[in-house]
Length: 200
Picture 1 (cartoon, helix red, strand yellow):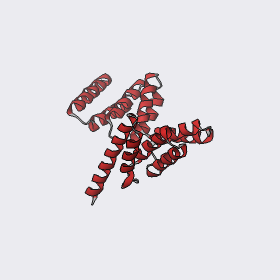
Picture 2 (cartoon, one colour):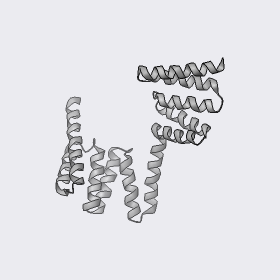
Picture 3 (tube, rainbow, N blue to C red):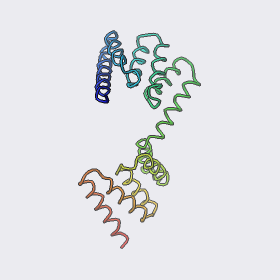
Picture 4 (cartoon, rainbow, N blue to C red):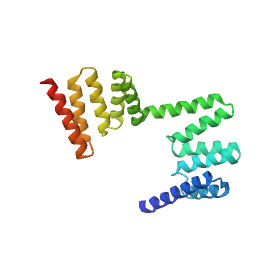
């Protein structure tokens, strides 16, 4: 049943956390035992355990074991950014620049697709006065995840900066609509009132 699978995954994640704690304490043998327990019955469900196993091998074991563990993590979860970053560093360290560049590009591509990364880019652009760039990043973020009030709020502020009052109001209405709390809804409502008062 799904309940059994859920319990198994919870146990796997627990063993993974215990493994990380032992690895940080320098207890290689116990860390390895915990990671193996995490992967025993769940090797297709817990990519972080493979990534952590790779890091353990990188510090204390054969380098090719580390590479294999990172690659396996990506088979389990092709979007595991930690495994990608670690592979990029691994190949850098071993003089395989082309492979390192390939995994660095994969990391960047995945980040660019992440709506929260694009929101951060939009915030940076807004701070630099690059409002069109902010709008472009925010539109992408909203296409990926359309229920984040802060995306719409910053979009409204960006439109305001380029003089598009109507678009700013639309964005603020949307921010109010998707806001998670009554307090946030009130805050956006007062901002919207202020915006509309400016046009009267």
